[in-house]
Length: 136
Image (cartoon, rainbow, N blue to C red; front, side, top):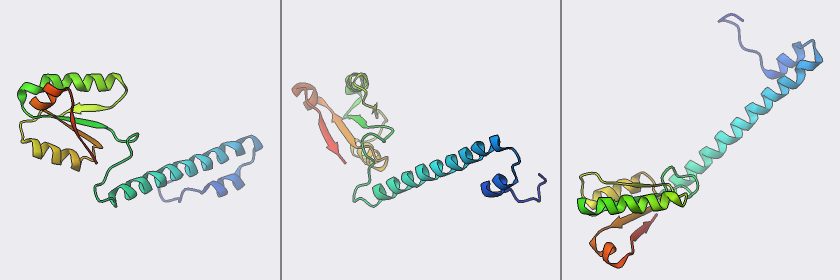
């Protein structure tokens, strides 16, 4: 096929086929096109529905990072990493945000990243063995 020719549709290719054993391959190509279209459409609908929410978020099972742990200061980072490791061992996708920014800014950035659970970890949480969480 030259650069100026228009590619044939699957119907035209099916009519031009001389061997009957090739026909299932044409139908397989058609089926793959339809399945990929359906998956693309489903993903678009999921993103569109999430964006229309007051606070946008994906369902828990589809988010790249399910939990973000925000330590209050540098002295709590090591313990926050330990909490993240415990969550990862239980098949929860968790990450620790130990950037040198304010806690409120890190929480706001986690909201913008559509993280469903944001855990803030500090001295009070260390003493009571609890974690303050925020569910989006």
